[in-house]
Amino acid sequence: MNSINKVKFGKVPLVFPIPIILAGALVRGKPNFETLGDVGIMGIKPPIVFISSGQDHYTNIGILEHETFSINFPSTKLLSKTDYCGIVSGHDVDKSQLFNIFFGELETAPMIRECPVNLECKVIKEFSIQHRHIFIGDVTQAYVNEEFVIKKEDRPRIVDIKNLDPIIYGLDNRYYKIGERIGVGYQEGKNL
Amino acid sequence: MNSINKVKFGKVPLVFPIPIILAGALVRGKPNFETLGDVGIMGIKPPIVFISSGQDHYTNIGILEHETFSINFPSTKLLSKTDYCGIVSGHDVDKSQLFNIFFGELETAPMIRECPVNLECKVIKEFSIQHRHIFIGDVTQAYVNEEFVIKKEDRPRIVDIKNLDPIIYGLDNRYYKIGERIGVGYQEGKNL
Image (cartoon, rainbow over all chains, first blue to last red; front, side):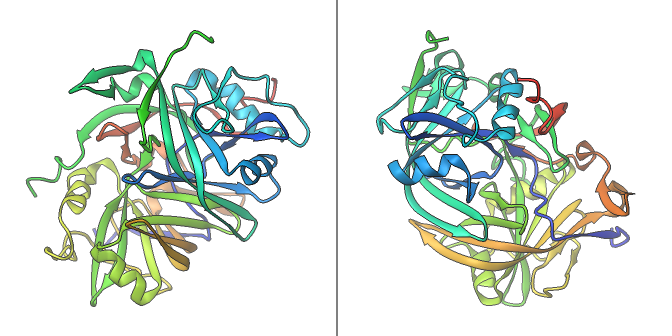
């Protein structure tokens, strides 16, 4: 095992695989969406998430104005529209007509109806690092398309994450589907 | 499309799928590793990453002492050991013998040789939110196992991310493999 040789790759943030999301905000009265892989969970209870957006990105204007944003998880059927939202900027193109939009309790975080999962977020902390703007949000409500939900012990549950068919991104600038299920959390290591 | 009904899921941070990593630190002179899905990219250039760790977690002691940590990406072959590191705490169990360890330039961020990819990180910002401790790190060096690397245009490249066989985690407490490749970044939306 000590014979494994390591190649130095340089100062590269090789975090993989990452989910691809559409971050939504209401900018100058119109919904705008930007494609990001710079997203993550910071805590479960309370539910804290973050997005990191380039400092000059159009979406930021709306997040800073309303202190709300959304995180929308596209399925692979939405791959070309999702990729498109990462190619063109809201500074140049009106993206408000690309999707069917709905609003939730916060009223200023536009969400995409055709995305199977949406998170409506309230900014609880924001700061800049280098040329990135980091928005940390409290999830005020999560929304899931009815077809993917069952009720179990009186709580809604997602039937199978594979049905949601999320878009995954690699460090190799490629998109992937999710693969086969291989285990259960907090179970696989029990017998070690 | 407007006929898609949404189910309110409550205050749940349904961010999926997420990579499963082993965060490493040198605690009281010994390497310790904790399993996390609370990890992400905050920027590419400069390369900024974060981990979010429960406030009482053992790993934090070492990160706060040395201001360094590592992020190690296990392959599915390491699933049971990886799950195990999320079940037991360094407060109770010595995890320093579980893996083959190496150190890099920072000298205080232990890395796991059998993980195909390792990131050596220097803390540039840290803070608490609720009961979580967030560590934001600059990637000072990334390491990749030689067998997965080719040289192309004089730079090291990863042959195929599927070879790295990462562990993916869903919002359903299940582990998954990565699936088939479905597209190229900044290409799929070009013709919209």
